Length: 248
Image 1 (cartoon, rainbow, N blue to C red):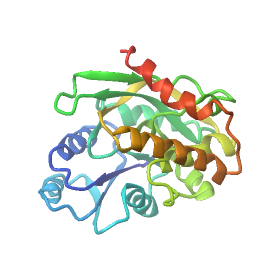
Image 2: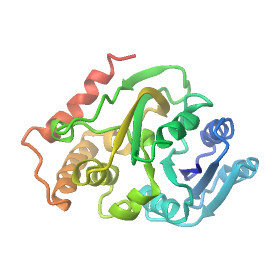
Image 3: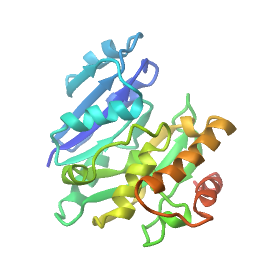
Image 4: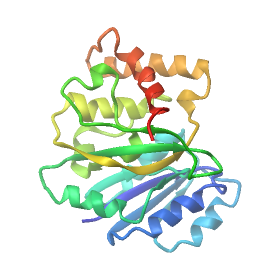
């Protein structure tokens, strides 16, 4: 089973080597690693050239990270697709092998797991832990969502629901997951372990103004899909993050 991993980069020289190393070291032997670069001006592309395991590199101007991800989805050939950004890593060399074991069950369409936010300069310094827990029928209505870097999806799911909606700037991943987890009835599997370390930071959490914009886009994500969240749904979504600081 081929697993395609899409990595988006833009001036990522400071972190991309960690990402490339963690893919190179995976024990699963059928990996298509795709790099979508936004015309980096630093040494990102030179670093990538040092890794022959990378199957495809596209470097051209894009309309943002979700546009870059869509480019990756359009050229991915794997039966299963995951997205690992250039400041994220898999926690060990067996992550993709475990994912492949999950998808050995042909009834499984989507797999997700747990994630740790770590310090920018120290990947062993944990800031908070996102333990997803099992998906329930009303989970999304209670402010739940899985960490996007841990989500693996069969190609046929994207073929049915489509790619990222570029009208959204910070909530395109949330909107796509509403399509996958709420609007459609795909068979989902929870892998109850931490598989990704993500460097802390992020567009939707960078400031109050970003958080307010993200909340507005979250509401739009439901509306786009013809769905109505509960009055408390989008208030619970950021509150859930607070509890992550107390988990290790």
